[in-house]
Length: 456
Image (cartoon, rainbow, N blue to C red; front, side, top):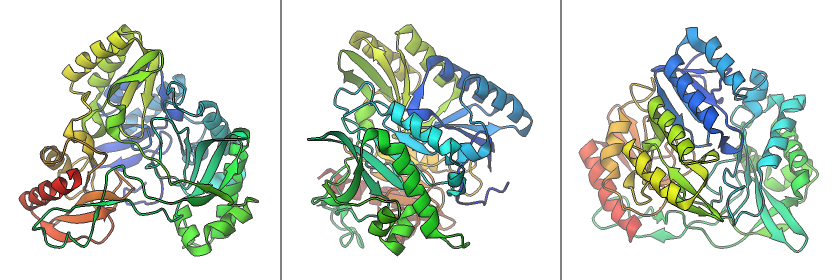
């Protein structure tokens, strides 16, 4: 395996070489993790790797620095915890993000956990889908307080309440969304005035057309759309590998038609949530939850183990991993949730929703990633203090133009290059920059100035 390979995601059965050893991604079904599993994963990270654990943007856990000689031991331990797939092909296609708090969110339209399990089972047994590209993925959004509108997906299912009961709207990646509302960019910043920044978490106006399905139909509809993608994309080496590209080439209507569906429902644009919304003490009906964020999604194995043990002492029923890189202990009494927050704060976890680090997404950077051009983790810590203490993700700091830490457009994106940082406004890491070759001081000045516009 080469670190330069593109278009696939690491797993436990197919780890990825990085600058600090092998990277193993443990795919957590529907974001649900028991306390026993959490402690077991912490032990695995410590005994088989370098002790660093990351929460990914799809609610999975990544163990870094895994030694080649420890792979078999790691896989056996993951199998004992039911945290590994039967084979690499199943692992590769089981790329599903489902609302992790749908079973405890009083505002969720339904608990999507069993639906997600059914879809994963369908993906595992349908050999026709083994040809799907490695990054092809699905989102199952239960609505409620924590919608998944900012989680990238080739096929998206969003729960809706209607006169005929609960149904899912079905969207395809690449369908045009109304533009978010602009905010002021600040004064005296050259090149920024023509690129309005989106209001973080803001939603555009208007409606879109989508197909719909009943909850029990979702796994079959997902499979039909995946097969339509494979058929229309074709087998050529340069064939589209994401739904976005196929939609741009063929149009969404033709893809729905190939799957036997009609996009005849008018629905509102997707809703999004902020990482801040899952941090701190959360009211979950008659119970409470406690959301904690490892700074920039990274933590040491010892800290994760202590989190699980502290949650057990406070009688949490389990953990939820969210695509906002937060960890939520659920099933708590309110008083115990507040006590747990104090304990986790002493371990270095973020438990205050106004912490400015929650507005930043950053990749591992150098030296952990061989392709990174800078130690972006260190720079991100300084830049975070310059951002307003409100809103969603405001800044993406990427070690290279691949932008692995965040696929969605971000108000501000800094991309490390040999000559310094490039700044992209309202875009992705690979988009054309507005400014090039910035020193860290120049980048900080722009982030501070533009951040004031985001807060206005």
